[in-house]
Length: 227
Image 1 (cartoon, one colour):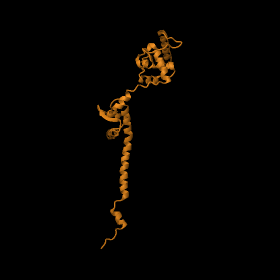
Image 2 (cartoon, rainbow, N blue to C red; image 1 turned 90 degrees about the horizontal axis):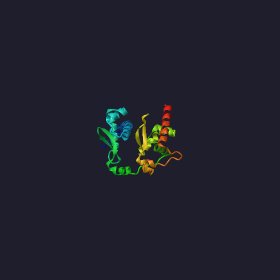
Image 3 (cartoon, rainbow, N blue to C red; image 1 turned 180 degrees about the horizontal axis):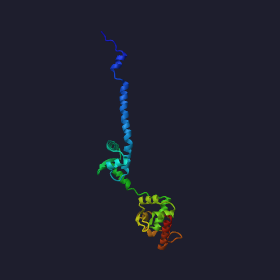
Image 4 (cartoon, rainbow, N blue to C red; image 1 turned 90 degrees about the vertical axis):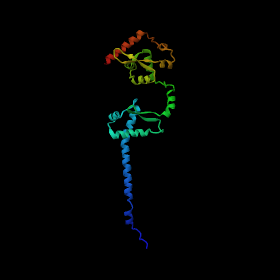
């Protein structure tokens, strides 16, 4: 004799509740997403710190600057490690000298070396040209002196010229202690000079050593008055 069909209620009692299963999966996924979201900002910050640091950064330093410690910090560090694992990225996460660092992938080194061997970019703004002229004719000269002549801060321009290798440090001012700067061989090469003595004379101002010293004294007096 055939068994009677199961009622809908009986089938529902034997089958797992699909809504419950969905809720369990959704809840688990939500927890995973929440954990990932919590770790991402910290991992992002750690990645940025390692990117700008010229030296390996220890776990202790990372804890100090992020304000996070123990498991949460370790999880974020591992997240950064995972981001740069494999060959997909040109950057490699490395643990060395008791700290962590980001370095160039070995397989990318040939291209990186060719890039670094390209001629330096010496494109110069009007402000940079003006600053170079001041340094070339009055060197060695300090940033405050350059700023007084230009009438505007020289910090950014001088830093860019130092980075390009067109200026270099040349001792300190005996009175103020400010670092002085002079032009480099790269400057002379860029402007086709055998040496700095090959600079053309300034029209209407054929500066003698005495003229230069008098101008420097005036600059010192102006600096003293502003202090």
